[in-house]
Image (cartoon, rainbow over all chains, first blue to last red; front, side, top):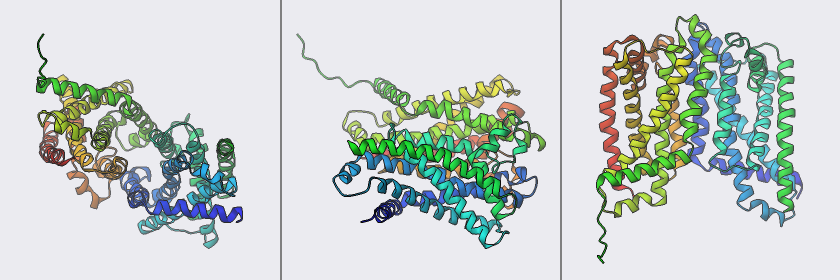
Length: 254
Length: 257
């Protein structure tokens, strides 16, 4: 069996496990939708300067991206359970490529993130969110979501392969993710932040990916924000992935 | 030599032992994050993000926001009570208590007193941070004391409701995750973070009847305006929810195995 086949089998397994836990499933779909609706209602007037639709153009991309971040704790815990529950040890006895399990995790996570992102985008469209840049930009929109999903899948692998337990992992991911969400240019405009914080807000991975999605939906700069997003994914995502692969290799060698 | 006969400890002693145990459990668990780190981070974050926008809207956010953070944090403390008591129920500890000659009120009382203490710590932490950035009690010392009492009372009432859910739950993790959805909606669709006129017109009646709005408005009245008619709705909600959740908690406790 080729490594690719093996990886897709693992991806399918992870997705099935996710879809077979109904409460977790409802939660993962309901949370971003409720987040979008509440933030739209609460801050739309004040942040959008009286124009809720204007706020929606930026808020919807941010909330869609947040599904990647807020899904990472359960993914990290899933990987931790694989490592400690004996699945990895069992696989060592079989002719399975070591990278297949990791690749399967990343692919499964990205598919889930894009799926939930599409649903959340659908709800945003009911509120009046529109794609104004043509069909190619729509493809680009979901490609950026997938790219952002790779970043958070890598972070989940890094956290899940480290020390820490099922109890402490989720808050260690949701805490920083919530802060990044609030301190992003999708939540409030950069100009509303105190000037010392503005560079941090501009560099925030949520901000750059939001700018890319705004450019691909409502219009605006695309190339530079996409490159910045790519830098975050290759930089931070790459480091996380390398650490996870090393830890995984050490474990697989016994 | 006399034979030792087991004399059941007095109700008060039982209560003290269980409360001390719950307190140790809270100190060992995620409680510090919940009562100190979370509210301070959220307070600082929201001040940085919204102070400028809110002052353009005509609101002094350092005076407006602390009651919201208090309500938000007391709700989280209450939610963790669900998680903690569900753990006790699942490990069989609650059934063990029920086999012992103990008064039925001791176990829930020991849970709620510790939740009240955790809520009080969180309120104190938030108020110290708030005063540092310019929050002031301008309605007198008696109303300031009322502020703290009302905040802790709200936490206890919510904790009773969450404990009722936790006792009936099979999986504490799932109940806790499920509770974050109503938490998100109730805390945001209220006057906690923005005034009612910032909501879409059709949603404003919903915001106005929310118990979370009543609570935040009462805390603001007690800290700032001193308009007592804003306090009554919160007290009525407290009484109604207290009776409802208290009865629910007693019922789940009797039924739990």
